[in-house]
Image 1: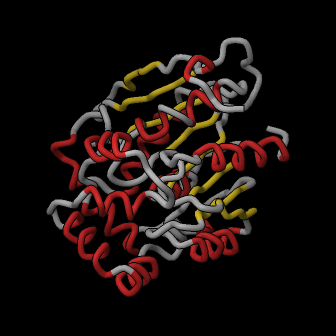
Image 2: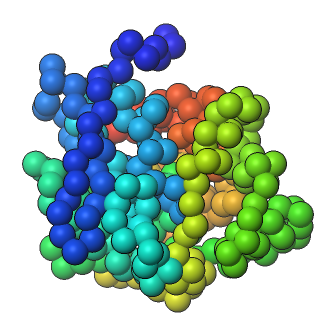
Image 3: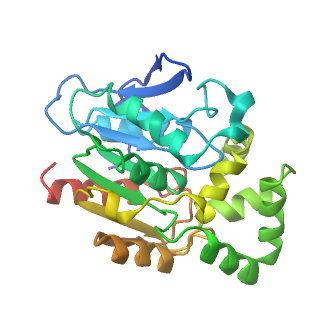
Length: 282
C-alpha cells in the first residue's frame, strides 16, 4: 500500500542545549510507544532533514518512536561557522548527547558518514545501542578504495566531487549521478540540491583513514549492513566487505543509489530495514 501524506504522524523539532546546540527531529505515534526507538544519523553534506519526509513518519506510523539528529554545523544545529574544525569524534559526541535524550537504548541507523559516526560513538566506554544498521556505509577501512573506484569508473563525477571537497561548486547533474540510482523528479532534485551544504574537511580526512573506528574498541550489537546496487559512492561490493569485517547481516537494495532515503523507491530500503528489525524482534 502506498504511503500517503495523510498517514503521517507530525514531525516535531527540539534543540539539545549545550556548547553546540543540536537539532533533533522526532516523530511519535502516540498509539504505540512499546517498540524500540530508532535514531537516524545522516551522512555528509546533509542534515536530519534527509530522513524527515519519508523515513521518520513511515517508521513512526508502524509504532517506532523515531529521532533524527543534525550533527553540529549541519541542518539547524549550531556553529556552522566552525564546520571545518569538526572531526568524526566530535560528531560522535553529538550522537551521545542525542541518545541521552531517548528514554531507552535505541537502534542506531547510520547512513554513509553517519555509519562511521555511529560506530565511533560505540567506542565510548558507556555507549550502547539496542542494534546497529549501517546503510551504504563508509567501510571500516575508509574511503580510499571507494575514491579510487570512482576515479577510474566515473572520472567526470570524481572531478566534480573533488571540487566540492575543496570548496568549489557542484552541478545538479553531478548530485543526481552521485546520489540517485533511479529516475528522480526535477523538483525533488532541486529541493535536495538547495538543502545540501559543505562538509568538514577534517571529518572527510578522518573518513579517508585518519580516525576510523577501531573494531576492537566497539561493543558491537546485532548489526545489519545494507548496500545499494547502483551506489556510485560506496559500491555494493564495498558495503558487503564492511558487513563481512563486522560480522553483520547483509543485504543489497536493488535499483537504488546512495541516497536510499531520498530515492523514488525509498520504501524498498525502509521495508528491508523493517524486515530485519522484526526478524530480530525489535
